[in-house]
Length: 290
Figure 1 (spheres, rainbow, N blue to C red):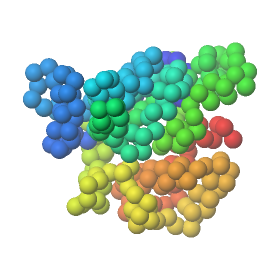
Figure 2: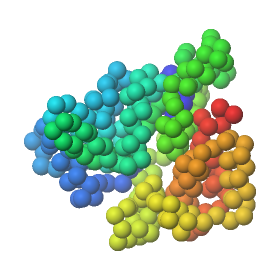
Figure 3: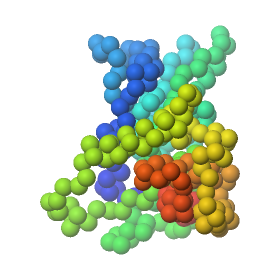
Figure 4: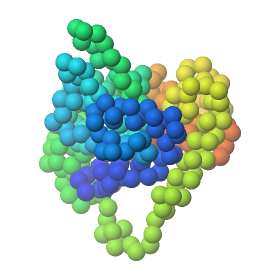
């Protein structure tokens, strides 16, 4: 999420666990094992809710992915089957961000030491937030940005292309106006959104029945060919996006997976051009660099 200070990025991230599907028993047991290793159970027999971890940007790579003489799990593994929230993403040290590549791709983290190696699970939903520029007001209609285009590009370049490729959805979060703050009407409650998410997850569980995967994000290349077929109009949109934005093969597969999920949320059996267009719109940082 990219937006100025106070636009609600952190609040949105903290609300995410309230709309995610409930932990299955298998997921709860896996999460409990990791938390038990770190002595974080606090008398509980089982972790019953999805974890939400939000490490500070001064964290070390060992603190994030795990480490030590006797390797212990880091924040990535403690967020297993939950949300890992990185606020002020460009403020994290580059070497710390780069170690996220393995867990985001393989959903596990392997720590090697002289005495041997140990693998911890790391199937997380990574959520990150950042300002559009160092001062936070680039593109704001009310306040002027004090930084040059070159300085803004250097600031955004702290997030490498390979890491950005692994972030499926990149959205702009605009500043909240007074009229919206003063509006007394209630928005859509989390319970209603969660019911919609649960229905989409049920569709995916049925799709991958008998397999060790349970959601679209875990689809292989073979699954993409089987479950993410698109019509001619959608194919043309993808071709244009790949050419104009210079997207990588990984970004292409991510767009297809997001399109499949949007179709599931819409209750559609097939992906249409509308879902593909929406998925492409969710890559705002890719668009901003071209």
